[in-house]
Amino acid sequence: MRSMLPVPWRNVQDWNCTACGLCCKGFDVVLDFPEWMKIVKAYGVGFTEPGISRFYLKRKSDGTCVFLYNLYGRWLCALQHMKPMACKLWPFKVSDKPKYGRPNEAVYNFGDGRKLYIYVDPSCIGLRWGTPNQDFLNTTMTEFVDIALGQREKQFYSTSALFRPKPWKLI
Image (cartoon, helix red, strand yellow):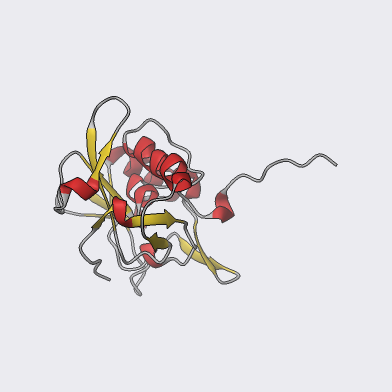
């Protein structure tokens, strides 16, 4: 699967993961060395593939990630507990340069004065197009940026609701 040209984040009203699995089908997932080591230690080298200068998650013959599985019609990730950065950020792409053009729409002013450029892969079906709503800005965008900058590891808003912790109810 080839993705279309990424679109600036300011064109996204909201985003929610639908657990459709499209992001895990046909895309190469690049691993940094520590991610590769974690996966090799936990599952063995057979779940990764070497490239010329990097490592990748292995894909099945149909192009899907080896860690993708279907549970009652929802596509889920078996690596949720050690999901690679590329997977945590998809469909968002965070950079310090306007890689895909339209910098005025892609710029995101981070709290410490830094400017980041954020784009989304328009092939994701969890995107709702329009002007960003406050909830999206205050929760999802903040979490994606924090994850991209290494300030947060755990996902809540930037993953499927199936993986979100459930609030405790007192009876």
